[in-house]
Each structure stands twice: as C-alpha cells, then as structure tokens.
Length: 268
Image (cartoon, rainbow, N blue to C red):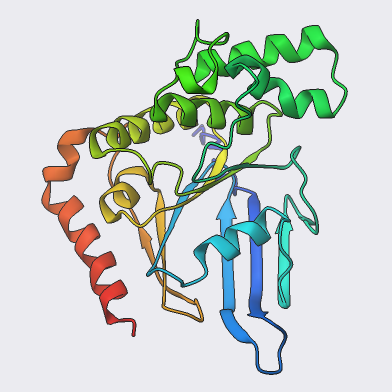
C-alpha cells in the first residue's frame, strides 16, 4: 500500500500596512491663486519597513511628513495610520524626530525624554524607568543627568530619538535628523539608528537630502519631483542587512545612488 505524505503548504503571511496615503494634494494659501506644494501623492508603507524620502529642496518632503504626523492638514486626499485617519498629533501611534533636537535647556537629558510621559500624567516611577531604558537603547546610559549644553550634537539627537521612542509608537517619522551634524558623526548616527531600528522594529519614514544616507538606511527609497511634489520613483534597496560601511564602495550601492540622482536632476 502506497502512503502519500501530507505536505502542508506554508503561506507567506502578508504584512500589514502601517501608513497609507491616497491621492494626497496640498495647496498653500487656498486653491484660488495658492501655491501647490504636493500633487496626487500615494504611498503604502508596510509595518517594520524603513522608508526614505528624497527630493530637491522645496518639493514638499517636510510638508508631507507633517501631514503624516497630524501636524498639518492636506487640501485633498486621505492619510491612514494603522488603518485610522490621523487628523491631529497622536504620539501613541506616531513619534516625530525633527532636524533640530529642540531639547528644553533647563531639563536634564533624562527629564527631556520623560517629558512626553509627564504630559500624559504617567506615574513618576514608570516614566523614569522607561526614559532610562530609552537612553540606554540610544547609547546614552549614564548621561541622564547631563544638560543639553553639556552634550555634543550627536548626543542631543540621540536624546531626541529617545524622546520620540519613549511612548512606544509603532511609527517613527524623522525629518533630516542628522543634517546639522558633521559627516563623520552623521555616518555614526546612521549606523546607530539602524541598530535601534533593528531592535525596536518600528516603521520608519526618514527624510534626507543625502543620497548616500538614503541608500545606506533604506529598505525603499521614494524619490519626489520638484514642486508640486510627486512620487516619481520607488527604489527597492536590495542590499543585505545588517548594513556595513564597506557596502558603500560596491557597484550595487553606486548604481542605486546614481539612479536616485538621475531622477532628481531631471526635475525642473
């Protein structure tokens, strides 16, 4: 008697969408005689992905990020975060790290990280434990008692990232957080950010003008046109993880960076 093996087909579990943007447009100053900033932008970002947005200056990258954060309202279109509209800031769903660290100079690093939790009335012991854990995560264990003026630029940005993570949002939006840093510190911070991301598995949307930074960090790069900003290319970065500095010298890395540059330089 012949026995037939019962083979179970393993189906790949589809990833859920963390951010959905449909036909988003924005005009500053109203539709009549206003300045069009964004036009018909549609994006889907899966959970746990690291997506980088690049484009020429003034193309609306930051405006788009502010709308994803609920800090600015679009003229047309729909934005969903975790399947729900985000019409106002919601730090439990979306954390934001800006270009400037924007720390309170009269608060210590630990108190700066605690601040969002204190606004929500979290118990002191709980917020202290969570803030200390976030400082450890970003590599600043032992620096909690330092004030912002006692920290380097890179350390201030680490505090800012810790503050963005302390409420444990599933999505982290980052608007050129390393732009003001020198090149060496910037590369180090990018590597540290990937370490933090691999630990937390947050969904990250990251804006930068640096094409090298974009390729080094991203799972996918979205390229925007000049104003009014549109998505003109979507580039999968098929480099293995964890990323290493040596990858920057490879032909694959160079081709990806050149493809982004060719798209940006074509825009008027």
